[in-house]
Length: 231
Image 1 (cartoon, rainbow, N blue to C red):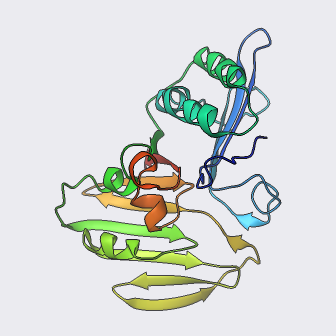
Image 2: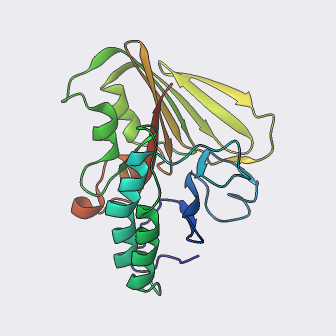
């Protein structure tokens, strides 16, 4: 486990374990959970997807080609530049092992915010308001990003939570509900309906300006990862 120190705004969460014994076996987990008691220890409500080709993990899917390529070409090089105390050769060794892994299928897709904001990739509307689309948001936080979503969706719905309650917002109507769970909500997910297709985005990005609206390279945004699936 290597903590970031040079890039203090890193918010992406990735767990990568690869064994090169005989053939490359891997366990990769991406999502909202930090490596803490609250995250992987079960203290928070999290949204994580894990990929593996170990036979003992029968319920896990193999990694997709898109995720494999992103980790090798974009994420690991960023880690090599930013992590304090991790030799570059070790990152290169991880990337070399990952290259041997067979990526299968096109989903889930993966998005980062190195060069383009996450919200631009999610909306992909060329600035046009899409009145027929639906949006559902699950996030512990929200801020001015809400106004940006309101410009694109006629009926955005929000779920913002803490360990005591969740807040549902629809057309400026607020409804509070008790959680049947004493854990804090830390998951982040965005469900967008486009005509007859639902796209689910989930990962590390809260519904905040730093996470969704800024890029890492140009305007000091947080380094984030979102996965996406058609459902």
